[in-house]
Every structure is written in C-alpha cells, then in structure tokens.
Figure 1 (tube, one colour):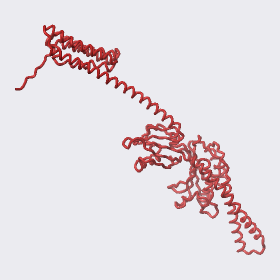
Figure 2 (figure 1 turned 180 degrees about the horizontal axis):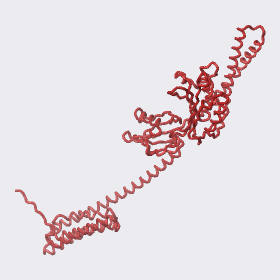
Figure 3 (figure 1 turned 30 degrees about the vertical axis):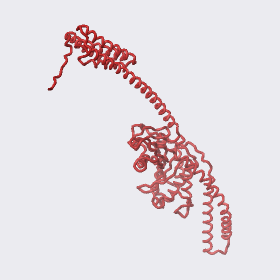
Figure 4 (figure 1 turned 60 degrees about the vertical axis):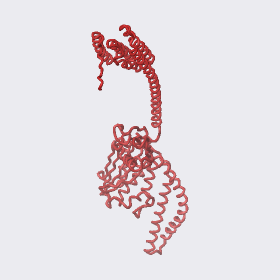
Length: 500
C-alpha cells in the first residue's frame, strides 16, 4: 500500500495575518536591498536588524501555521548565524538563546490556546532549540578560528610585503645588474644597474626582452631549450657594443618558473687583466732589450764602418745595405715594444667626439695630401662626449687612418675614408667606425690582425694594430675589426661610458 503525502498549508490558522506578514516582508525585502546598495545604515546594523526581522517574520508564520509541526522552524538557524559575519559572536549567541526561548514559549502558548499541551510539538521545539544553540556555538567557534586565520594571513601578508620590499631594495642597490624574466620573455623586475647596462631602455615593463636586448634574449632562449634548470654563464656583446657576462638561474618550479639573470660588465675585469699583461710585458721587454740592443748596436756600428771602406764592390755594398736596413728595423721593433711596456696610466679627459675628430682629420689630410671629398665625418648626435686620453686616441686614430692610406689602394688618391659615430638604440656605449673602400682583409688573416708582430708587409713591425688595441683597452674601451659585405675594412672603437 502506497502512503499518501501530507501537505501543510502555511497560514492555515490565520490567513489574514499571514497575508499581511508576507506583504510586509516583501516591502521590507525591497527596502533592505536599497539600503544594502547605498550602505546605509552601517552594514553591521543592517545585518543584525534584518536578522531580527527574519526571526520575527518566521515566528509569525509559525504562529499562523500551527507551530513547529509545519516543519519550517529549521529556517531559524539561518538568521541566527548571519550576525556572525558582521558583528561579535555574543550577539548571535544571545539571539540564538532568545530564539530558543521564544520557540518553546510559542508552543506553550499555542497549547494553552487549544486547551491541551502537545508533547510531540513541545519535544520538537526543544530539539530544534538545542540544534539552534549547537549551531550557534559551532558557528562561534568557526568564526573565531576564521578570524584568527584571517589575522594570521594579514600578518603574513604584511611580512611578505615587507620582505618583498626589502629584497627589491637590496636588488636595486647591487652594483651588478639583476633581471627577473618570465618564461614568456616578459620582464618582472629590473634593477638600476641592469637598466644602465642595457642602455636605459624606456617602457621596458611593456616590452619583451627580445626588443631591446636581442643578443641576451638569444642566449636566454638557448639556455631554456638546452641547459635549464641548471645554472649557466655566457659572454656576449650587447647591441654590438657593451661586453657583458650573463648568468641564468631558474626560480620556482619547472611548471611555473621565472629566471634570474645576473649581468656583469666585463670592462673592469678586462682592464685589470690588461694591467697585469702590460706589467709582464714590461718585465720581459726590459730583459730582452738589454740583451739584444748591445749586439745589435755592435752590428750596426760595424756595418757603418765597413760602408766607409773604398774597396767594396756593388755586391758587398748591397749586403751592407741589407744589414743596416734590418738592424734599423729590429731597433724600431724594440723601441715600439719598449714604448708599449712603458706606457703610463691614461689621463682620461672628457672630449667632444665630433670636434676632436674634425681637428684630427684636418691635420691628417694636410700631412697626406688628401682632398676634402676623400674623407667624410658623420657623428650623431653631434654633442657626443667620450672619456679618453687624447694622446692615446690620437695614436689609435693615426694608426688606423695611416693603415688605410698605405694599404687600401696602391694609389692613395682613390682612397675614400668614412668616419661614422653614434650610440645604438638601448646601449650606453659610443661606437666609432673607421671605414675605407679598399681591398679588405682576407678571412684567413682576420683572426690574427691584433697579434703582436703579425704583418703582411715587409715594411711594418706588426705592432701597430696590437698597440692600438692595447691603448683602447687601457682606456676602458675596445677595438675590433668588422667585415663588410660591400668590401673594404671597418675598424670599430667602442667607447665605454660606464663611468658616467
């Protein structure tokens, strides 16, 4: 036999009062939405007030429906717990106690009204009161624990924010450059040293690394594909100018990782190595010069005495000329090495690059009978300043321009010399290119250009380019050779402005 469900009609005991309370509650609901939107009165007052209204409305509904037997008394738990969200737990506990007392009182009142006490409804209301009190007590414990966790999380958040600010302050004060890069290539952090080393890039937060540091991004992608998560270091030349040593270190997990990039300017280290090298060279040349110059002087003196003899034929005279020429050449080589090893500390000065070059080229053209159309000078911006020893810069430029005059063409009147200087985008250094329209240098000889005593000419000592590069290094700069697809030679001086 299938039982039939029993439906309870709300408001059956007093339909008129039920109708009035539902209409009134609808109006209160509209008002509560408006007051919540405008946040007046205070939200805590609203929470307690509307909870009390909900409890009163539920009591009226229970009264008009015949008591807790209708089964909606459990809804009283909700308005009892709501004040926990916006006020202290004591208010909710007090509301729970008053609700329980009123609930039992309601059942007693309904029983007296009917002339008999319904023990089942009274037991039901007692159990419901106990449940409301238990829910209120558990809610109080849960809210207290949640409040403690919230306070702890807030303290931890403040500590993390302070630690993050401290770490950022430390990173910003480091002399070495620091970058934090996401896997996508976006930059999360860049300290002042890195910003300076990468040429003061503007709006770097909105640009990927490849835009203003393509060489660095190339090594970064290589590290990601082949080496990560192991730490690795690379040497590179940023924007074909600044020499950097970079080290990549993984931060975080493999799935959600960032990369710490450490940037170091190698120019200072290069200058230290250069100083040690020159000191060693000075000791070596001082020892060798004494041992070579004495016999060389004796040979030259003997050859000079023999040349004064009247009994020499043409063959002997030719042999004496060879001896004297090679002795002179050997003495010139010794003098060059001694001058290099005795080189004093550079006396750097701030020089206007365009003005200094204009004066130098005017003297060079005058001494070598070059026409104005054979030499062009282009410096952008025109007010570029460099820090260099004027005497050393003159020696370097004279050597490079003299080589172009001697070796670019057999006929010097066909020489075209272009001097171009400027600062590439996102670089702190100044580049100066000395370009000629000559035959160029064969590829198999380019690796040996700056080796001491290497020359393809029978007239030179092989020390010109070597000395020019050493002078550039001693001034914190660099000298290098670039191959041109159009032919000719291009020597580049990279003036470092790290001290500015």
